[in-house]
Length: 333
Image 1 (cartoon, rainbow, N blue to C red):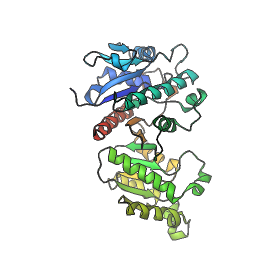
Image 2: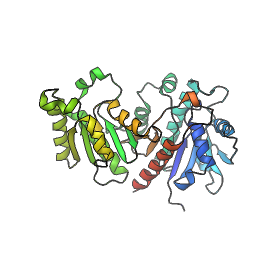
Image 3: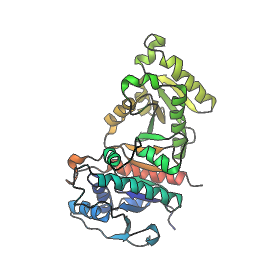
Image 4: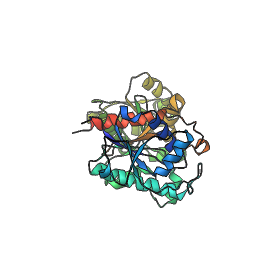
């Protein structure tokens, strides 16, 4: 029996580039090198994606996981929920949004039943999911609800071997300082530490970025570093976590990209995103950090503007599959 993990591969929003990415990787037989893949999504959308590439590989179309013959053709659990006529390229639709919510339901259940060891998903459109009835902030919150997960969780962005977590995320810059606390920073620290360990790194090295210019200049340019970030670092160290800083944010990533750290804890959304996307926009991935299952996607979005043109790059999703496979193996008991 193969030691490669069985991974669900959700096709994502059918109006975006997710199905094309997956179609290109199927065409190259990429998945077989890292996992035993099970595609999850509407087979009609996949046929449309293959037609964009002038390709028509054999698929094993099943209605449920238990029907799969792993000795046969590439399996796809046909969810029959994204009619291509109702999900045109480059268009936000409720149908695609609901399909993504239902797909997460299915994959989480398959994981709980120990039929898959994790999953990757093509890009979602948050507006579409909210239009379909999701009242939660993001897919990460939706997944946490499905798992009944109450420990720290959240989006982790990864480029190469560098991981980043955020203390605050989707809030206005004007509200960042008021939302910093030792407790919230420690939540991000614990999330980074646990997630890195789940990827096989025994003693993660974490850097904490400062909030203010020059790390606050000893209180002359803000006191958040003295009053909040430094105490959080001391608390983390007392727990045996290898945390250091706060480092001025304009040099934190210079040190990190040199390999001095495994992860960076940032204070706000763009503090890490700008650095990672400037360094490797087409390579980055997003991990659903803290959750019981390896769940990974590409860091870019649905790219409606190029959907259906066959020009999308696959490197970020390739990295997502590699990471999900690596985490699945590391998390085996």
